[in-house]
Image (cartoon, rainbow, N blue to C red; front, side, top):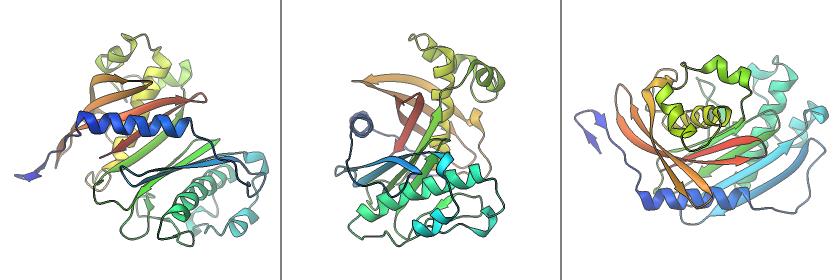
Length: 264
């Protein structure tokens, strides 16, 4: 797929539809099993055999965070995070708990493996796995696969922006044209801005190994919207220094948050 040093990738419409269906099933799925403590309010897991993709999710309550939970849940707190505020530590714990759920469900039974931190603070999954993590201040998610059919996976969750948040990033994260593509469909500006921001975060996570600098939102341009059932897909034209791609991002609104997923 590498032509003259330019990487080109295109996700097919049918695959986009399937990924949207995965996201829809995940949001509407529930599991009933014992919670480990009061910090974890709920959790669930979905396995999608078509992509050999595991999606794990939890909701957490920072009020019940305690440093002892790292030992209780057998999750390693990296040295560089030990001096961080407890809010950041609790979010890290919830994200790694979601990863633990996903890894434990895999045939390899990787529940004892740790998702470590890379040089750019990115999550590093065990060998031969492709994974991604995200969290807000109340939710955390993990997506992971060992399938050779998927090369890029990125997930992001963001609380829907307030008008103050929206005004602060206008022009920095998206163009007026990108916002217009969504608002023209009746989506309010705050949700539209959150959708674009979250989608670009998911793209960056999925292609972080190909993007050697920090995220540049203007290199990811929203070009098309596709409604598939109860889900929304957004096509982005990505123009990086060493590759170009057209990426489909699936999106859902869930509990006053935007959830986006790239899997191809």
